[in-house]
Image 1: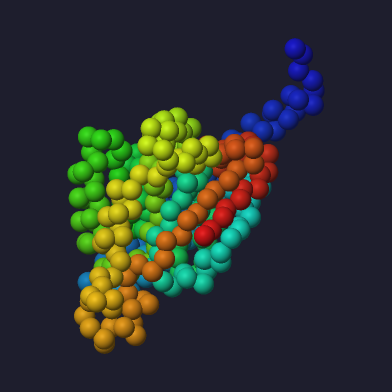
Image 2: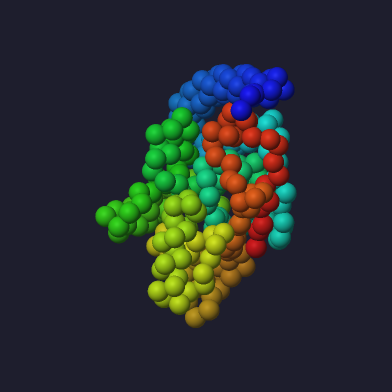
Amino acid sequence: MAVTLEQAQRVGYTLLKGLLRFGFMVANNLVAIPSYILYLIILQPVRLLDNKRFWYIEGVLFKWLLAMVASWGWWAGYTVVEWGDDVKVVSEDEAMMLVNHQATGDVCTLMMCLQDKGTVVRQMMWLMDHIFKYTNFGIVSLIHGDFFIRQGKAHRDQQLVLLKEHLDKHYRSRDRKWIVLFPEGGFLRKRRETSQAFAKKNNLPFLTHVTLPRLGATQVILKSLVAQQENGIPAGGDAMVAESKSKGLQWVIDTTIAYPNAEPIDIQTWILGYRRPTVTHVHYR
């Protein structure tokens, strides 16, 4: 089949745009990430004198880095429409955000969505697959205090213990408010058949666009972060009742990302921008 001049021009334009975008983003990373690390090294005396102030500054720098990643998608015409409950009204409360998982671009989509949600981005903790530790953004996530989790039965019990230790050590000491995780435990295309077989065997809902969640990490987070109760009031007595709204995990936010024609955006598309402008829908409950 012969290629027309118009088709050849379109392919050439897409390749050129992809190369330019890739070069620009390499430059972004070479400047922004070392700058983030250098600033935090310089600010180590502040950490010794005022730990809370140090993590506030780190959170601001972290938010700027996520805004940089979000801008790559916006530049390519990848926008988001948000539906459901207004989560901005609980941005100052502690919350756990559960998100369905279809592709690596889900993380970038959330980076775009959460930029205007008050202090959420700078005070959030991410749970992500350990493979992200070895990406260009891995060092940033390590410094910020995100948790990298290994998948598979061989690691499951150990990872839950490590998650509990990580939350106890870093969540409150760094003034974190939101924690984001993907409870499906993998991409939809990889987990759907297994999930459907498990649902059929155990008389559970047969799901097509999402999979049944895995509960281990969610249960650890709830047990670790929800304020303990004694006779219906927060542990510690009546004096804590007035402050209970700001103590402990208050909300679970069910978040669903939906792509047109069920075609998710991966990180390569987000960076190179070779897909036509797309509107992604995000629903909160």
